[in-house]
Length: 194
Image (cartoon, rainbow, N blue to C red; front, side, top):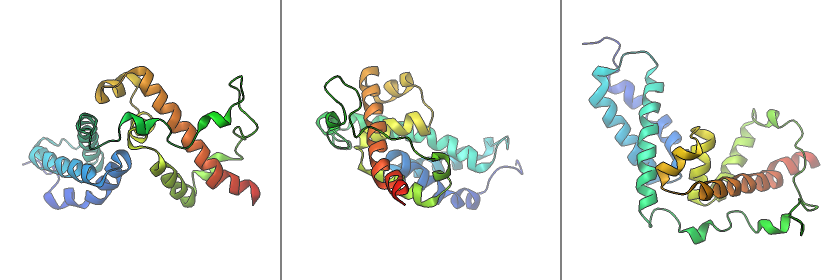
C-alpha cells in the first residue's frame, strides 16, 4: 500500500470545497452535487493510483474538472436543464441602447474603472460579482466560466457543448457585456460616487 495515498476521510474533507467549485461553474445545485459525488467515487476507486505528485486537493480538482465537462455535455443535450436559445437573446437587458447608430459606444458606454485590481482583493466585490454572474442565463454563464475560469479555448468549448464558434463568441460577448454592465452599476459606479 502506498503511504501517500489519501484515505477516505481526507477525500471527504474536500467535499465542501469541491461543491463550491462545481456550483460556481455549473450554477445548478443538482448538477454540482452529482459532479462532486462522481468525483469522490472516482477518487475512491483510483486512490491506489495517486502518486502524490500533487496535493490531494489539486488531484480532486482535476477529476472534478472532467466531471464538470461531462455534466455540461449532458446539460446541453437535455433541453430541460438549460434554457432554450430564446432565453439567450438578452442576458442583461437590451444592449442596443448602449450604442449609437454607427455602432459606437453611446453616452452610457463603459467608464474606466479606477484601480480594478484593488477590487479583486475585497470580499464584497466577489459577492457582487457572484450576484451579477447569477443574473446571466445558465448557458451564457457556463460558456463564460469554461473560457475564463477553466481556461478552455473556443474549440474545446464548442466541442464540449456542441455549439458553433460563432454562437460561442456571441455568448462570451454577452456574458462580458452583461457582467460589465452589472458591475458598473453595482460596484464600480458606487465606488466612483463614494
